[in-house]
Image 1: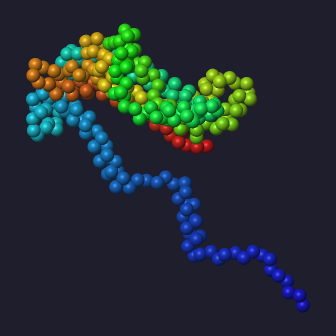
Image 2: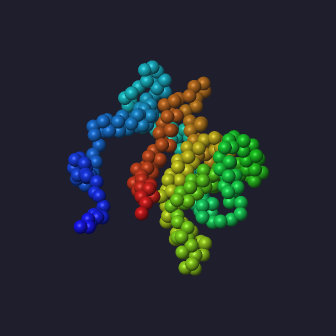
Image 3: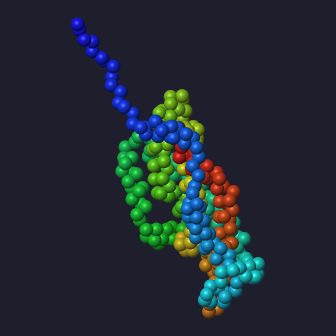
Length: 304
């Protein structure tokens, strides 16, 4: 009598712990994980360490210059904060310096984001001859120290009659190699080539593609780049100190250079008071725009 062959594939026996493991995985898949006590302790320590310089700046601004340099340094606020703020505001024109710094930082941030996004899109998605070589040259300029360009740049602004004018600080910083490279790296991954080609097939010209396709995709990276450039331009001291004067149209950092200077000594409490005044606008910007910046970063990090 013929024997029939069993063609049913063999099923490997399940281990004893396989089914409970899968069940536990399904039960915990949708749960939100909570941080443990150690995580909160580390976060509190990191927050205290990060905020301590700002706290001590407030403490130093509320004491006299003699008390600030004494040992041990004061750790509790004093009673001269309002007096020091009034003196620092009147000793140099802090109001004009705040306006000038806001204008310079805003223009530099907006132009850098715009031109870096356009150049980054060209390097990332537009095929043209010499693209790799040009990108290498742009990246190579990041290795050149900015001190090497001070003398020729100073000669240019003096020949143009821009010395002690805000355009001497704004125009040399309209675009940065870091911004071009940053936006190029983001758009390489975030912007599909098929999306650009589909827009061209629909009859969209280059400006419309940039406005309706590139800018919406690049918005998270543009927000981050704008924040970084704005802070860098706000705190820039080296070139503005050369191109501007404290008595002309100074930025905040140039104005702070002449703050607290006496006949033979420097009043460190007044200097730190001016530094506190220059820090407050940045804190307000982060307070009002922090959620939007973090939301943009999060939106850019999530892949569909």
